[in-house]
Image (cartoon, rainbow over all chains, first blue to last red; front, side):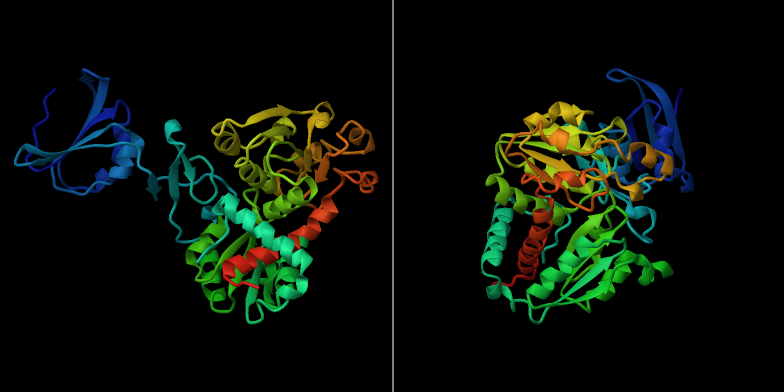
Amino acid sequence: MKVDSIVNGIVIDHIAAGKAMTLYRLLELDKLDCPVAVIQNAPSEFMGKKDIIKIDSDVDVNLDVIGYVSPNVTVNIIRNEEIVEKKHLSLPRKLTNIIRCKNPRCITTTEQGIDHIFMLRGEDRNEYRCYYCDAKP
Amino acid sequence: MRNLINILDLSVEEIAELISVADDIIANPAKYRHVCDDKILATLFFEPSTRTRLSFESAMLNLGGKVLGFSDANSSSSTKGESVADTVAVVSGYADIIAMRHPKEGAPMVAAMHSTIPVINAGDGGHYHPTQTLTDLLTIHHEKGRFDNLVIGLCGDLKFGRTVHSLIEAMSRYSGIRFVLISPEELKLPSFVKQEYIKDKNIDYVQSTSLEDVIGELDILYMTRVQRERFFNEEDYLRLKDSYILDKAKMEKAKADMIVLHPLPRVNEISTEVDDDPRACYFRQAHYGKFIRMALIMKLLEVKA
């Protein structure tokens, strides 16, 4: 399968297989009017299978969303068909308005205009907790 | 500006300092009678409470300050849909310090984010209740004389019992602590409390469903009420409400110097026949609450005697 290389844009590589569409939705890539390629189950030497997203435009993407959905992702910034920057992502320390708290007793269920914040706790366990009520996502 | 949302907002040294001030207030109340003469405490109680609110109000009045507020969400603008953020933004202009109770977990945190005056969490849902924990610590200090090398039994509703969560967090910072967690399966300690404050700190603990089996090894027995207001389902409440009842027969199996604490109010989980036992500390515990809240208000308002 061949997908054209991009001139100026972003390649999100090493996405865990099966996570590309989740990222596509959370990054709201459907709202872009530039070419976006989603490649699923591409062969990978280290991962076996991986997903890739190519965005043929110089847009801002929320790196926290990417790090949360699929840690260990590589984000390549492309200029004139060359990789000018390579970002290796890990789990972000703080998630703001990416996921919502499901605890029915949490203040976020009733308070208007409040940011939904999750903090990474117990880093060896890679676990997020609601900033307000400590519930898991 | 300091707030008290979680007991861990205070260091072990600050807790020792608060206990020292509380001791001095008990010994020399006259010295503190006017330290807050020009200060106002706002008690924003979006959930009914008797002793916590009265304890806060009595604490401020004993410091010479004044009190305003509401004791029920129905008498506040929250019934009109006003947010916590807006409420505290307004109250910040009317008072010098806020004590807030709210049924929603994390509400005092939201209040602190939008307030220009110190906010004290006076209980948020089944989450935290740090001033009860300060009360518990002052009681333990007076009744046991130490915070280390204690076997602490926590009995009843460990899932929604916010006083239990805060006490475990506080005691997990002292050495030689062993927790005995006594509850029915449905009301076990939430995983985040067990993981972060017991397992991650390699603190010795055991879980049991029988109070009788473990009461003999305890230095402190912390009893809690199964709280009707935390259940969405009345059937679950009725099934679990009588899980543990402390009576004279069980007390006979306990150490001679064990102390029984309870954040109150009790329903029937401690039989009244236990009240005369010198090991029953819960009414003395309630009295200590006023003194430690006086010390806390002074600390957050940065006033000294």
